[in-house]
Image 1 (spheres, rainbow, N blue to C red):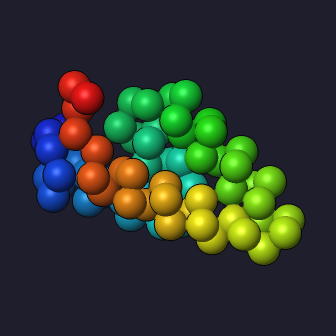
Image 2: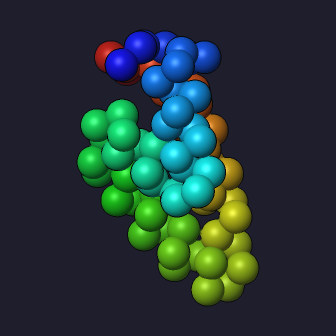
Length: 68
């Protein structure tokens, strides 16, 4: 997969996270961050704040730079 912000891989990951929080991180191979995003979003959707984590998940996937 391509590396760096704006790469095809990050765009695909961001689109995946748009549909399911954490899926983009999973596509990028970041299992722990994927689980954190998914669990936080699920927990916070109960009190209608899940959109914050959902947005964070999308931005994190889009702006991810390997090797950080």
